[in-house]
Image (cartoon, rainbow, N blue to C red; front, side, top):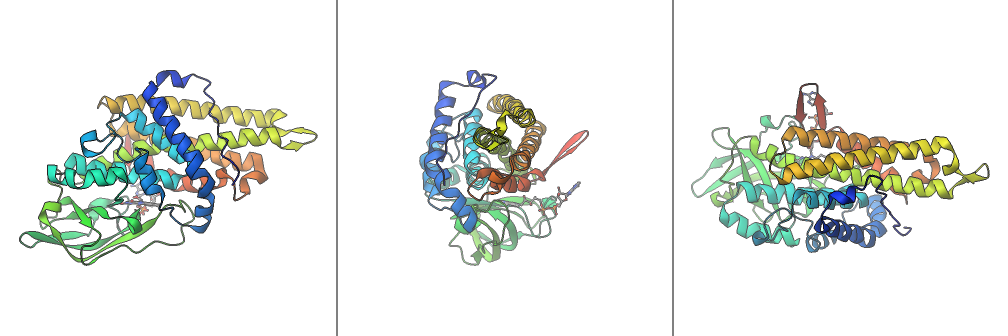
Length: 382
Ligand SMILES: Cc1cc2nc3c(=O)[nH]c(=O)nc-3n(C[C@H](O)[C@H](O)[C@H](O)COP(=O)(O)OP(=O)(O)OC[C@H]3O[C@@H](n4cnc5c(N)ncnc54)[C@H](O)[C@@H]3O)c2cc1C
């Protein structure tokens, strides 16, 4: 693949809103993506293979659970830093950002927020460092948008419980050492359980043939009378608010991440518009192309400002799930439009397998449908 020459314009001096620490975090992840992700990712996406080596690398760069306190191995950073990390990772690849989002927001967050002190100490440092990868099991074959109907269940058996059921479309599943699984107890109440890979009766078949997020590993979780010790049940939450709380954090990462994908498309389109000669001049010299580029960077800048404000509210503990959904919905729409426009307006270059926008567009399509807006309420889908 060609060298990653990404440059980020800043017409509204958004950088002035960032602290030195934010800029350090962003630049460190940006450099990591340029050096380790961009050169390899198209090849992995083409082969639909998960680049396993990134798990340790993401841990080393502090991308797993950056907001988790340092005493548990996390970064102790604020939500702007977390958002900037997701933006930079997704500029490289949505699958890479998904791996980090799932680990941080859907595995480490519930263990930190709903877990016992023993669970925090046992699992969080290994997950933060990338020694272990985790996954989050909520979706079932017949219950996607409506997880309350889930069939996975566990029955009391003395000092342990017996877990049965299955989950599907689970990111990271084939390579995970642990899974945070949501299932119903004897009373029909939803609880979270930490299931470890070596527990008998637990398998994670890989999902093949995805058209999007091809460099991300997806699989099923199958529980056939799995004996789970009671100390692996998350003690501090019950009901759907457990998984929905995790999904709000994950959506926050998606709001930033998809704008990273859009930034990459804009950068590639701008560069191409200066290089591609038609009618004896660079196509970027034609006003119709300039209009499209101007619209792209305007929408990116507006979304960055919305995300920044949301990050401030998140760090202050004031953000609502509706605000998170609003930002995610906006970012997905902006990114989808920009990737589509990049493909339509700048043509042949974007159909090349070696270039990002085609690949970005495919993966964003898989995210856009997952947040639905209703006039007076945000329905939040995983
Ligand atoms: C690549 C990938 C990775 C994933 N990773 C995970 C993971 O790690 N863990 C996990 O638990 N799940 C994961 N999922 C599952 C994902 O969260 C579900 O796809 C999502 O919850 C939607 O469920 P569904 O696909 O069954 O769609 P359905 O629920 O069948 O919905 C189909 C369509 O109908 C729409 N719809 C549904 N209800 C309504 C309504 N009331 N009003 C209007 N429209 C509606 C939906 O928006 C959607 O467009 C992943 C999915 C994908 C594709």
